[in-house]
Amino acid sequence: MIPISWKSLLSMTVLPNIVLAYTWPNPQLDELESQRYDRHGYNSRALSAGVSPCKNFLFGDTAGRANAADWIRTAYHDMATHNIVDGTGGLDASIRFEEDRAENAGDGFHLTLLVLTGESNRYASLADVLALGAITAIEQCGGPKISFRGGRVDATVANNPGVPEPQQDLASHIAAFTRQGFTKSEMIGLVACGHTFGGVQHDPFPNIVPESNDPNNTSGNVRFDSTFVTFDNKIATEFLDGTTGNPLVVGPEETNSDKRIFASDGNVTMSSFADAAVFASTCADLFARMLDTVPRGVQLSEVIEPLPVKPQGVYLLLLEDGSIQLNGEVRFWNTSENPNRKIQIKWKDRNGNPCDGCSKAIGHTIDQVSTFVANNEETTSVWYSFNQSATEFVTFDQHSSISKFWFEVDEGSGAQVADQNGASFEIQDVVMLADSSCRITSNLTLDIAIRKDVIPSRVYLKADDFANLAPFMRTIDVPPPASTSGGDSYNIWSISDTSLNRGWTIAVDVGDKTYETAYLQHHVFGTCS
Ligand code: HEM
Ligand SMILES: *[C@@H]1O[C@H](CO)[C@@H](O)[C@H](O)[C@H]1NC(C)=O
Ligand SMILES: *[C@@H]1O[C@H](CO)[C@@H](O)[C@H](O)[C@H]1NC(C)=O
Ligand SMILES: *[C@@H]1O[C@H](CO)[C@@H](O)[C@H](O)[C@H]1NC(C)=O
Ligand SMILES: *[C@@H]1O[C@H](CO)[C@@H](O)[C@H](O)[C@H]1NC(C)=O
Ligand SMILES: *[C@@H]1O[C@H](CO)[C@@H](O)[C@H](O)[C@H]1NC(C)=O
Ligand SMILES: *[C@@H]1O[C@H](CO)[C@@H](O)[C@H](O)[C@H]1NC(C)=O
Image (cartoon, rainbow, N blue to C red):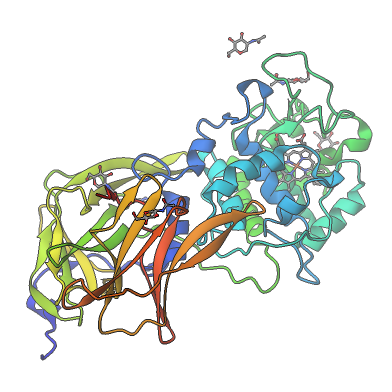
């Protein structure tokens, strides 16, 4: 068949070329992008709820503490072991092996891990989630947008100690920050940026703050500034005008580390923070550098920006009538609902050729939600589904199948193409779930359709799990089928498993390539008969 330049046949405009942070599908960056940006409403991820409202404390309303402050402090303490000379330490979730050190006094790290570990998985390391937890807290509680890169690697052992403590002198603090990679004025900035949240509690620091009899403040938390869960420059202005109650400024002289640090350049840096915009932009930069401080050899991604058009949870299903169904949803970023909007999903067949009738309207709006908040601004997204339970399915013949899809969006003034600047959205059809799959409570029977024209060297499930509070992946081999079925194009392999209670995928090794489904845990299984 002569390849048709299909675009030349069409007179429609293409959405303005946007420099994409990455091209979908990229399972790791797709997952991190969702955790980073899908904060509210439909498909929202859990981090945001942990700091909504900002004074939220998941371990008791009356403690006088906040998750937001613990998450930010945890990210700093985890990073603070970094040694810029030998490249060891940095944001690598080693804090989980370092909790009993005096420099990590308090239970804030443990409580943070209890919450944030649950958001980590094979694509989002615990260290990435610690970074995202801090970013979510800062951004949602009045702070500026913080650049986020992904790809942190979880340490398997503790790092060398090295978190600064309040009773140490200024020279040790300057030395500690130099070792971490920060100058003296950056040290002043980073401490002020961190200490605009939270305070000091009695239990871990009995010599700094007194015991509290207040039933609404059982931890005796004495705040660093008068707005303890809000990102603002009061940490600086209250210091400068002498009204500060910061226990590391007006506490016992020996532990007045903030006082020594803040004044260490003759108040030049702190005075510059009297300008709220300077404070916000300085903190945005320093927080990003703090979170990107990783052990040498760890390669971080580009800064992850939201994809303007992002498919989510896309998977193929081989139906009993032999056709293939495309399931999924699509998010339009920073877009409002428009009742006149018309969306077509279009696709090319298995061989990359355009096909007759490979087009379907997907008019079903799921939700319009505000997804992301920074600089006290919200951004709205709108979601559409072409999933299992939508009334109109996107289906095609198993012989022609699919290789890539894209969208055409008409807001009422002509169709525009959303195809990742020409790349389209690629999807593999080598392995997929068959509709005959079923469950009896947690016992899943998976019927796995594998294309007949490939010779798999291994078929296996990849299942997410946890060990030592961090994510890891198990594999479960699928035995070859006794007989073949599934139509002309597919064989069905089968396995039952009761342990797939977190994220899981089906993978097929063919030569040196691995074909893998998206996470399938949202598939609605029928009950086995
Ligand atoms: C010389 C450097 C630093 C010293 C000596 C220091 C000391 C302290 C102390 C003693 C506490 C009280 C902890 C508790 O009672 O649970 C604290 C809390 C906190 N620190 Fe620092 N800190 C330093 C730097 C930083 C930096 C660079 C950040 C972040 C960028 C940060 C973020 C926080 C936060 C958010 C809290 C509040 C925790 C809560 O309220 O639960 N600190 N810090
Ligand atoms: C504690 O907080 C609750 C709810 O905000 C309030 O009703 C109560 O009066 C407070 N108790 C004290 C002793 O301040
Ligand atoms: C909590 O208790 C401490 C110690 O009694 C007190 O100094 C601090 O001001 C209290 N914090 C709040 C927010 O009430
Ligand atoms: C810095 O500011 C504090 C608070 O106003 C003040 O007590 C201190 O003397 C100042 N230090 C210098 C070197 O100006
Ligand atoms: C959202 O879109 C509007 C209009 O195109 C643009 O001005 C704004 O900067 C966008 N906001 C974000 C956060 O991308
Ligand atoms: C499918 O779409 C419907 C509505 O469009 C939604 O309620 C449901 O949660 C979606 N299911 C999955 C598995 O995505
Ligand atoms: C799970 O279901 C399969 C198929 O019905 C059955 O053969 C297997 O024994 C079940 N496993 C468990 C642990 O119940």
